[in-house]
Image 1 (cartoon, helix red, strand yellow):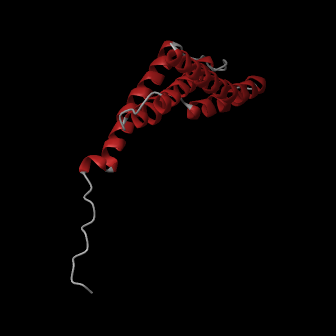
Image 2 (cartoon, helix red, strand yellow; image 1 turned 180 degrees about the horizontal axis):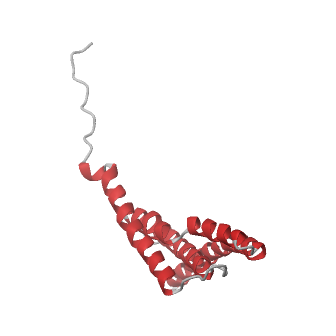
Image 3 (cartoon, one colour; image 1 turned 90 degrees about the horizontal axis):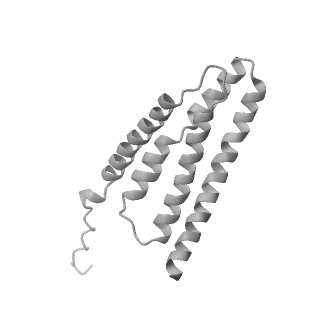
Length: 148
């Protein structure tokens, strides 16, 4: 041994811990869930009716996720809390696959098996199509913007 002290481990700054991300996700999730609840109040689904509001909320939310993820990966370096706040928080709270499952269950209980199967299939198809189309359109817009 040479007697030299080992270098001190790097100090962790409080702002780099999990708390800012947790707070960003929590605040965003609250805002997204409130927006989803507002949509359900504005366009309520009658008992036994097809859950159009849930389908639309999930499709719009997934489209916005496609725009967000392409934007944050291809348009420079966003703030480190942008993606957790907007993606996991706001849009994660806005999209509602738990309500989707409850809607399908209620349709089955109401004897509307055909509508339940349609909702069961249409929601993930619409969500995947929306995220794909929005991401592709956002990439095209970015390319057009860069070529000008």
